Length: 298
Ligand code: HMG
Ligand code: MG
Image 1 (cartoon, rainbow, N blue to C red):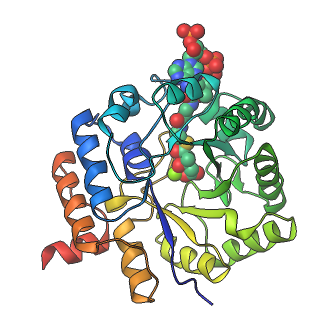
Image 2 (image 1 turned 120 degrees about the horizontal axis):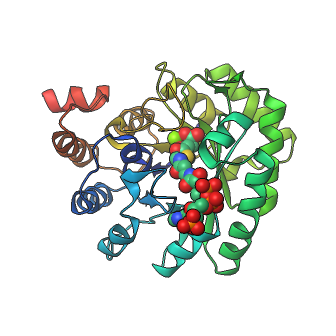
C-alpha cells in the first residue's frame, strides 16, 4: 500500500539555483527559502559548500546561511570534503549531504576523483559529521543512466550505495541525475537494494523530469515503501556537470499527486505555487511545472 505521509526534501534553492545561468542575489535566495518554509516544507536544502569556481551560483554560502536564522525548517547543505565540512560547521549547520556517483565518468566530472577516491574523500567527512552530531545524507548520482556511459548496471549502483551506507550515512538519496529512469527500473533497483540489506526506510528518491517520468517513478517508489521524495519548487534545476540533465521533479506536481492520493505532506500548495511564480519572475522565465502553470492561470 501507499504511505500515509511523505516527507518532501526540497532542493530548489540548491539543485535548482546551481543550474541557473544568472547568479541570484543572496537576499532573494534567503527570501525564497523563507517562503518555502512558510508554505510548509520542513526540509529545505539551502546551498553547497563546494569550490566556488565549480559552482559560482552557490559561492555565497557563507552569506546565505546567517540570513536563514529563525527559518523554521531543517536546512541541509552539500559538502564534498573536509574543507566544505569545516566551512559548514563554522556556521552552525546541523545537516550535511555528501554526494557520490555510481559511475566513474560522473565522479571525475563532478568531483575530480574516481569513485574509490571520492568515497575515501567522504569517509572523514561522514565520520567527523557524525561525531559532531550532524545528520548525514548520502546522494548517489547516475543510478539509472549516465550521459557518457549509457545504462548503469544495477549491481554497480547497489555496490556504491552499500559503501555510502557503510560510511555511516543516515539516509541515501537515489539520483536519476539525467531523468532517464522508468518505473520498472526503479522497482528493480529498490528490490535489489532491499536484497542487499539497505533498509527502504532510509532511502529517498531524487528524480529529474527530462523524459516526463518523474511522477510515475515516484509512484513506483512509494508503492515499494519509500517515504522521502526530493523535489524542487517550480521544477527549477538540473546539474551543471551532467549534460542533458533538466529540472528536478517539480514540488507542486508532486504535492498535487500526493494530496490526490490522500497522502499528507504538510504543504500548502497555494502558498508554494505563489512562491514559484515569484521566483520565476526573478529568473525572467515561467516555471516549467505543469501544476504551477495550471494553478497560476486560474
Ligand atoms: P579539486 O579541484 O579536486 O579540489 O575539486 P582540491 O581538493 O584539489 O583542492 C583545490 C583547491 O580548492 C584548494 O585551494 C582547496 O582549498 C579548494 P588552493 O589550495 O588551491 O587555494 N577547495 C575548496 N574551497 C572551498 N570549499 C571547498 C573546497 N574544496 C577544495 N569545499 C571538489 C574537488 C570536490 C572541491 C570540486 O570538484 C567541487 O567543488 N565539486 C562540486 C561539484 C558540485 O557541486 N556539483 C553539483 C552537486 S551534485 C548534483 O547536483 C547531483 C545531485 O543533485 C543528485 C543527482 O541529481 O544525481 C546531488
Ligand atoms: Mg539533482
